[in-house]
Amino acid sequence: MPTDASAPATARSLQVPGARLYYEVRGEGPLIVLVGAPMDAAAFAPLAELLAVDHTVLTTDPRGINRSRLDDPEEDSTPQLRADDLSRLIAQVGAGPATVLGSSGGAVSALALVQDHPEQVHTVVAHEPPVIELLEDREQLRTGTEELVATYLAGDVTGAWRKFFAQAGITMPEPLIEEMFGGERDPRQVADERRWFAHEMRLSTYWQPDVSALRAAATRVVVGVGDDSAGELCDRTSRALARSLGAEPTSFPGGHTGFVETPDAFADRLRSVVGDG
Image (tube, rainbow, N blue to C red; front, side, top):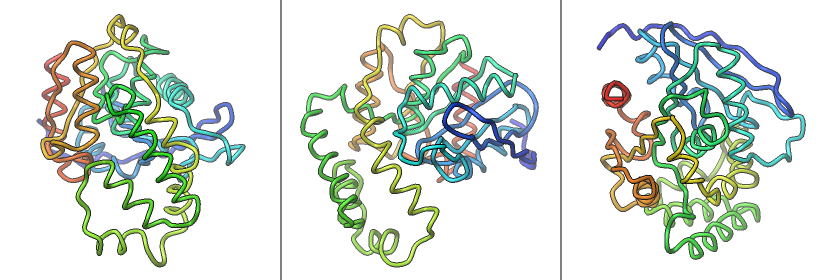
Protein backbone atom coordinates (compact mmCIF):
# COMPACT_ATOMS: atom_id res chain seq x y z
CA MET A 1 0.00 0.00 0.00
CA PRO A 2 1.30 3.51 -0.75
CA THR A 3 2.35 5.47 2.30
CA ASP A 4 2.22 9.10 1.13
CA ALA A 5 -0.84 10.53 2.94
CA SER A 6 -0.44 14.17 1.97
CA ALA A 7 -3.08 14.50 -0.78
CA PRO A 8 -4.69 17.95 -0.38
CA ALA A 9 -8.46 18.35 -0.33
CA THR A 10 -10.30 20.60 -2.76
CA ALA A 11 -13.47 22.04 -1.17
CA ARG A 12 -16.46 22.51 -3.45
CA SER A 13 -20.22 22.93 -3.27
CA LEU A 14 -23.14 21.69 -5.37
CA GLN A 15 -26.65 23.08 -5.52
CA VAL A 16 -29.24 20.29 -5.33
CA PRO A 17 -33.00 20.42 -4.77
CA GLY A 18 -33.52 21.97 -1.34
CA ALA A 19 -29.87 22.28 -0.35
CA ARG A 20 -26.33 23.34 -1.19
CA LEU A 21 -24.00 20.41 -0.49
CA TYR A 22 -20.46 20.87 0.75
CA TYR A 23 -17.99 18.24 -0.45
CA GLU A 24 -14.26 17.62 -0.73
CA VAL A 25 -12.26 15.80 -3.38
CA ARG A 26 -8.76 14.38 -2.91
CA GLY A 27 -6.38 12.46 -5.14
CA GLU A 28 -6.71 10.76 -8.50
CA GLY A 29 -7.76 7.30 -9.60
CA PRO A 30 -10.79 5.05 -9.03
CA LEU A 31 -13.51 6.82 -7.06
CA ILE A 32 -14.15 6.03 -3.39
CA VAL A 33 -16.94 7.84 -1.54
CA LEU A 34 -16.75 8.04 2.26
CA VAL A 35 -20.02 9.05 3.88
CA GLY A 36 -21.66 9.24 7.29
CA ALA A 37 -24.93 10.52 8.67
CA PRO A 38 -24.78 12.66 10.68
CA MET A 39 -20.95 12.53 10.63
CA ASP A 40 -19.52 15.16 8.31
CA ALA A 41 -16.54 15.21 5.94
CA ALA A 42 -14.07 16.13 8.69
CA ALA A 43 -14.61 12.79 10.45
CA PHE A 44 -13.38 10.93 7.37
CA ALA A 45 -10.42 13.21 6.56
CA PRO A 46 -7.63 10.99 7.97
CA LEU A 47 -8.99 7.94 6.13
CA ALA A 48 -9.53 9.99 2.97
CA GLU A 49 -5.92 11.18 2.98
CA LEU A 50 -4.66 7.62 3.24
CA LEU A 51 -6.81 6.44 0.34
CA ALA A 52 -6.16 9.49 -1.86
CA VAL A 53 -2.63 8.42 -2.73
CA ASP A 54 -4.12 6.22 -5.48
CA HIS A 55 -7.85 7.02 -5.52
CA THR A 56 -10.16 9.93 -6.10
CA VAL A 57 -11.81 10.29 -2.70
CA LEU A 58 -15.09 12.13 -2.20
CA THR A 59 -16.28 13.17 1.25
CA THR A 60 -19.27 15.34 2.09
CA ASP A 61 -21.30 16.93 4.85
CA PRO A 62 -24.76 15.33 4.60
CA ARG A 63 -27.61 17.73 3.87
CA GLY A 64 -28.40 19.95 6.84
CA ILE A 65 -25.14 19.10 8.62
CA ASN A 66 -22.33 21.62 9.16
CA ARG A 67 -21.53 23.28 5.81
CA SER A 68 -24.33 21.64 3.74
CA ARG A 69 -27.11 24.16 4.20
CA LEU A 70 -30.82 23.61 3.63
CA ASP A 71 -33.34 25.94 2.02
CA ASP A 72 -35.75 24.77 4.75
CA PRO A 73 -33.93 24.02 8.04
CA GLU A 74 -36.93 22.00 9.26
CA GLU A 75 -36.83 19.57 6.34
CA ASP A 76 -36.42 15.92 7.35
CA SER A 77 -33.38 13.97 6.16
CA THR A 78 -34.49 10.68 4.59
CA PRO A 79 -32.22 7.94 3.26
CA GLN A 80 -33.74 8.48 -0.19
CA LEU A 81 -32.88 12.20 -0.18
CA ARG A 82 -29.34 11.48 0.94
CA ALA A 83 -29.00 8.77 -1.73
CA ASP A 84 -30.10 11.27 -4.38
CA ASP A 85 -27.50 13.70 -3.04
CA LEU A 86 -24.79 11.05 -3.34
CA SER A 87 -25.94 10.24 -6.87
CA ARG A 88 -25.60 13.88 -7.89
CA LEU A 89 -22.20 14.22 -6.23
CA ILE A 90 -20.87 11.09 -7.95
CA ALA A 91 -22.11 12.43 -11.29
CA GLN A 92 -20.54 15.83 -10.55
CA VAL A 93 -17.14 14.35 -9.73
CA GLY A 94 -17.44 12.19 -12.83
CA ALA A 95 -15.11 9.37 -11.85
CA GLY A 96 -17.71 6.66 -11.20
CA PRO A 97 -18.97 4.06 -10.89
CA ALA A 98 -17.80 4.29 -7.31
CA THR A 99 -16.89 2.29 -4.30
CA VAL A 100 -18.93 3.70 -1.41
CA LEU A 101 -18.07 3.24 2.26
CA GLY A 102 -21.01 4.31 4.36
CA SER A 103 -20.87 4.20 8.14
CA SER A 104 -23.82 4.18 10.53
CA GLY A 105 -26.53 6.40 9.02
CA GLY A 106 -24.22 6.82 6.05
CA ALA A 107 -24.43 3.08 5.51
CA VAL A 108 -28.20 3.47 5.29
CA SER A 109 -27.66 6.23 2.70
CA ALA A 110 -25.32 3.93 0.75
CA LEU A 111 -27.83 1.07 0.75
CA ALA A 112 -30.53 3.43 -0.49
CA LEU A 113 -28.12 4.52 -3.23
CA VAL A 114 -27.78 0.90 -4.38
CA GLN A 115 -31.55 0.54 -4.48
CA ASP A 116 -32.19 3.78 -6.37
CA HIS A 117 -29.03 4.29 -8.46
CA PRO A 118 -27.23 0.93 -8.75
CA GLU A 119 -25.49 1.91 -11.99
CA GLN A 120 -23.39 4.48 -10.12
CA VAL A 121 -21.82 2.17 -7.57
CA HIS A 122 -19.99 -1.10 -8.14
CA THR A 123 -19.23 -1.85 -4.46
CA VAL A 124 -20.88 -0.69 -1.25
CA VAL A 125 -19.37 -1.33 2.16
CA ALA A 126 -22.21 -0.77 4.61
CA HIS A 127 -20.40 -0.40 7.92
CA GLU A 128 -22.73 -0.96 10.88
CA PRO A 129 -26.03 0.36 9.48
CA PRO A 130 -28.61 0.81 12.32
CA VAL A 131 -31.44 -0.93 10.43
CA ILE A 132 -33.48 -1.96 13.48
CA GLU A 133 -36.47 -3.07 11.38
CA LEU A 134 -34.58 -6.30 10.67
CA LEU A 135 -34.53 -7.24 14.37
CA GLU A 136 -37.15 -9.19 16.31
CA ASP A 137 -37.21 -6.58 19.08
CA ARG A 138 -37.81 -3.71 16.62
CA GLU A 139 -41.00 -2.55 18.36
CA GLN A 140 -39.16 -2.19 21.67
CA LEU A 141 -36.35 -0.36 19.90
CA ARG A 142 -38.79 1.99 18.19
CA THR A 143 -40.34 2.79 21.56
CA GLY A 144 -36.92 3.46 23.03
CA THR A 145 -36.00 5.69 20.10
CA GLU A 146 -39.17 7.74 20.47
CA GLU A 147 -38.44 8.17 24.18
CA LEU A 148 -34.86 9.33 23.74
CA VAL A 149 -35.80 11.74 20.95
CA ALA A 150 -38.58 13.18 23.12
CA THR A 151 -36.14 13.50 26.02
CA TYR A 152 -33.71 15.45 23.84
CA LEU A 153 -36.34 17.75 22.38
CA ALA A 154 -37.61 18.46 25.89
CA GLY A 155 -34.17 19.87 26.71
CA ASP A 156 -32.58 17.00 28.66
CA VAL A 157 -29.52 16.54 26.45
CA THR A 158 -27.45 14.35 28.76
CA GLY A 159 -30.53 12.29 29.64
CA ALA A 160 -31.16 11.65 25.95
CA TRP A 161 -27.58 10.57 25.39
CA ARG A 162 -27.74 8.22 28.39
CA LYS A 163 -30.76 6.56 26.84
CA PHE A 164 -29.10 6.49 23.44
CA PHE A 165 -25.96 4.74 24.67
CA ALA A 166 -28.01 2.30 26.74
CA GLN A 167 -30.12 1.30 23.74
CA ALA A 168 -27.05 1.14 21.51
CA GLY A 169 -25.36 -1.23 23.95
CA ILE A 170 -22.38 1.10 24.30
CA THR A 171 -20.82 1.48 27.74
CA MET A 172 -20.24 5.16 28.42
CA PRO A 173 -19.14 6.33 31.90
CA GLU A 174 -21.37 8.98 33.43
CA PRO A 175 -18.53 11.53 33.88
CA LEU A 176 -17.71 11.22 30.18
CA ILE A 177 -21.34 11.82 29.18
CA GLU A 178 -21.38 14.96 31.30
CA GLU A 179 -18.04 16.09 29.87
CA MET A 180 -19.09 15.53 26.26
CA PHE A 181 -22.70 16.72 26.32
CA GLY A 182 -23.11 18.95 29.37
CA GLY A 183 -22.08 22.56 29.91
CA GLU A 184 -20.85 24.93 27.20
CA ARG A 185 -20.53 23.38 23.75
CA ASP A 186 -19.71 24.40 20.21
CA PRO A 187 -22.86 25.93 18.65
CA ARG A 188 -22.36 24.15 15.33
CA GLN A 189 -22.02 20.80 17.07
CA VAL A 190 -25.20 21.48 19.00
CA ALA A 191 -27.08 22.50 15.84
CA ASP A 192 -26.00 19.34 14.01
CA GLU A 193 -26.86 17.21 17.02
CA ARG A 194 -30.34 18.72 17.31
CA ARG A 195 -30.97 18.19 13.63
CA TRP A 196 -29.99 14.53 13.98
CA PHE A 197 -32.35 13.95 16.90
CA ALA A 198 -35.22 15.95 15.43
CA HIS A 199 -35.03 15.26 11.70
CA GLU A 200 -32.80 12.29 10.93
CA MET A 201 -32.39 9.56 13.55
CA ARG A 202 -35.83 8.01 13.28
CA LEU A 203 -35.94 8.16 9.48
CA SER A 204 -32.58 6.37 9.25
CA THR A 205 -33.19 3.69 11.86
CA TYR A 206 -36.77 2.96 10.82
CA TRP A 207 -35.78 2.60 7.16
CA GLN A 208 -36.20 -0.96 5.95
CA PRO A 209 -33.86 -2.17 3.20
CA ASP A 210 -35.42 -3.73 0.11
CA VAL A 211 -33.50 -6.97 0.41
CA SER A 212 -34.76 -8.28 -2.93
CA ALA A 213 -33.52 -5.15 -4.72
CA LEU A 214 -30.15 -5.31 -2.96
CA ARG A 215 -29.70 -8.96 -3.88
CA ALA A 216 -30.77 -8.36 -7.48
CA ALA A 217 -28.48 -5.37 -8.05
CA ALA A 218 -25.19 -5.84 -9.88
CA THR A 219 -23.58 -3.84 -7.06
CA ARG A 220 -21.48 -5.85 -4.63
CA VAL A 221 -22.79 -5.23 -1.10
CA VAL A 222 -20.40 -5.86 1.80
CA VAL A 223 -21.74 -5.57 5.35
CA GLY A 224 -19.04 -4.39 7.75
CA VAL A 225 -18.87 -4.86 11.53
CA GLY A 226 -16.31 -3.55 13.97
CA ASP A 227 -14.04 -5.98 15.76
CA ASP A 228 -14.85 -4.15 19.01
CA SER A 229 -18.62 -3.86 18.44
CA ALA A 230 -19.69 -7.34 19.55
CA GLY A 231 -23.07 -7.25 21.29
CA GLU A 232 -23.82 -3.63 20.40
CA LEU A 233 -27.01 -2.72 18.58
CA CYS A 234 -25.29 -1.94 15.27
CA ASP A 235 -23.44 -5.25 15.43
CA ARG A 236 -26.82 -6.97 15.72
CA THR A 237 -28.41 -4.98 12.90
CA SER A 238 -25.42 -5.54 10.62
CA ARG A 239 -25.45 -9.28 11.18
CA ALA A 240 -29.18 -9.36 10.54
CA LEU A 241 -28.68 -7.50 7.27
CA ALA A 242 -25.88 -9.85 6.21
CA ARG A 243 -28.09 -12.89 6.94
CA SER A 244 -30.92 -11.42 4.89
CA LEU A 245 -28.49 -11.00 1.97
CA GLY A 246 -27.19 -14.54 2.34
CA ALA A 247 -23.71 -13.31 3.23
CA GLU A 248 -21.29 -13.22 6.13
CA PRO A 249 -20.41 -9.88 7.73
CA THR A 250 -16.90 -8.58 7.14
CA SER A 251 -14.82 -7.45 10.10
CA PHE A 252 -13.11 -4.08 10.31
CA PRO A 253 -10.69 -2.73 12.95
CA GLY A 254 -12.09 -0.83 15.92
CA GLY A 255 -15.68 -0.24 16.88
CA HIS A 256 -18.57 1.72 15.44
CA THR A 257 -16.24 4.55 14.43
CA GLY A 258 -13.18 2.45 13.66
CA PHE A 259 -12.28 4.66 10.70
CA VAL A 260 -11.76 7.52 13.21
CA GLU A 261 -10.06 5.43 15.90
CA THR A 262 -7.53 3.60 13.71
CA PRO A 263 -7.62 5.06 10.19
CA ASP A 264 -4.41 3.33 9.05
CA ALA A 265 -5.64 -0.15 9.97
CA PHE A 266 -9.09 0.66 8.64
CA ALA A 267 -7.66 1.82 5.31
CA ASP A 268 -5.62 -1.38 5.00
CA ARG A 269 -8.71 -3.48 5.65
CA LEU A 270 -10.86 -1.47 3.25
CA ARG A 271 -8.27 -1.85 0.51
CA SER A 272 -8.19 -5.60 1.11
CA VAL A 273 -11.99 -5.91 1.05
CA VAL A 274 -12.43 -3.81 -2.08
CA GLY A 275 -9.56 -5.63 -3.75
CA ASP A 276 -11.18 -8.98 -2.97
CA GLY A 277 -14.10 -7.94 -5.17
